[in-house]
Image (cartoon, rainbow, N blue to C red; front, side):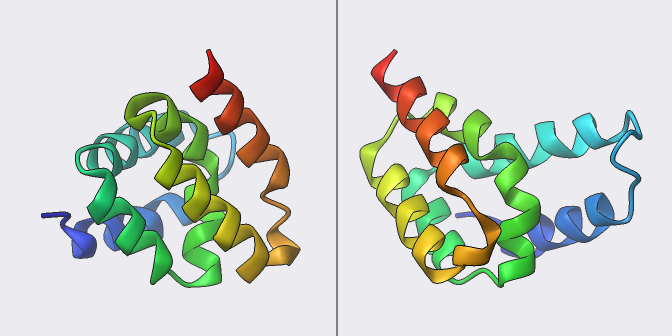
Length: 102
């Protein structure tokens, strides 16, 4: 089961860091690990995220995609792209699809 409160906490902590802070990579690693454990839980979680949460998580969509290698995950991202169109997730999704194709 995905610990959603931990994920939310990590997103908040990450959002407080400057984009060039080396600690950013620590948060990316932790979040990627958590969100790669069970793709169904991750999809369910992403479907209920706020726009701001999706914004921060989009930094690691590619990393998650590489670990889960799942078309259902890509379809979830496409739905999020439509739901939050101003986030411009299309390029991230294209890269994610390329990861799956190898």
